Length: 136
Image (cartoon, rainbow, N blue to C red):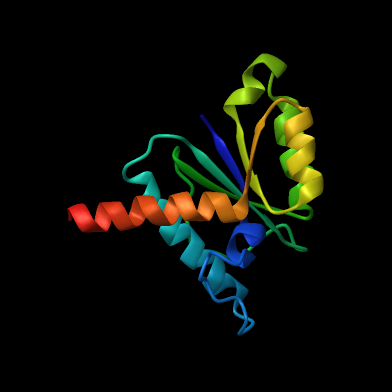
């Protein structure tokens, strides 16, 4: 089941613990991608992380792969909505949309996708990583 994530929403949710206060947005984005890469070691669902970027390019050193892809978009909300719309309706329930933006959340829900609040997803992500670390 694909997961599409509004990157800045996930970084800036209260539960994340990723610091975005010092103005180093790329460091915050790289921290999120490190968490998601570790998560992908034990999960097979592809993840698309969408970041708002005025230039359409973030300047991250991250290399996309089949399991984790980064997209820089002038408007992440519009990109996510188009992603949902481009998926055949009968397959949309398989898409998980991670966002804190109510407009995107309810858009995904009305389009029959599965919306998840950023705080909820972050808690599941953190639990998964903590469990993995515990197992060694």
